[in-house]
Image 1 (tube, helix red, strand yellow):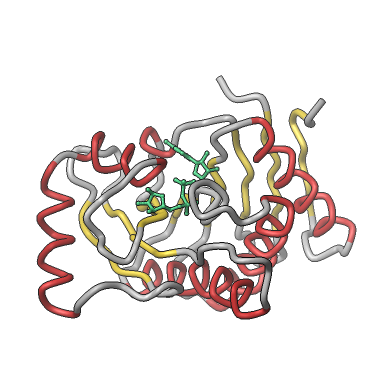
Image 2 (cartoon, rainbow, N blue to C red):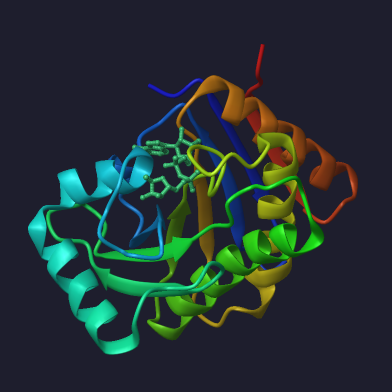
Amino acid sequence: MSDFAAILTFANGKTLEFHGPADITKETTEAVVNAANSSLLGGGGVDGAIHRAGGPSILQECKRIVAAIGTLPAGKAVITTGGRLPAKYVIHTVGPVYRGGERHEAETLASCYRESMRTADDHGIRSLAFPSISTGAFGYPVREAAEIAARTIVEALPTCAHVEHVRFVLFDPATCKAYVRAAEKISRESMAISVIFTKGPS
Ligand code: AR6
């Protein structure tokens, strides 16, 4: 059971949803995004959870990608199938490691979201779920990261031919709260035509 949900609906009928606390490995969107590292060999946090739940085929595909293109730079994205996950695909992206908030870190974080959206769209994917990239082991302050994440999706969504629904799946209450703030800010700026907060943060 989640404690928080907000849905922003835009003029073209596309939606951006904020949802949590929740586990992205249970998501039934067509694709889920993984906050990976450049090796694509798995790790802790959401990366570990996705590989555990999805099974070994995801790692095998990641190894084939690395053999073909080398390690994945921060800000880029690649796609594998979802193995045993309910989602059909996993899009793996590498967030920036936070080292004090230099401008290129914000740009790299925005690039993760843009590249993931572009990859999904190139594969005809209609619905996509994101975790909060870089705000765990990579140490990005969640309030700043939430605003970059939400704004980048709001900008990218209208340009997609296929992606219609994007959902942030937020693991813990503090992360939910930060994304609620970002959602509220965006809704105040009237980028969305309808905003529904079914439960706010306390
Ligand atoms: N569902 C949704 N979100 C989750 C889940 C889950 N099952 N598990 C954790 N989170 P992190 P990063 C949240 O550390 O900061 C890995 O070792 C978590 O609470 O997973 O980008 C990789 O291999 C936090 O809000 O990713 C890399 O080496 C968010 O996901 C490194 O960590 C991101 O936390 C990447 O670090």
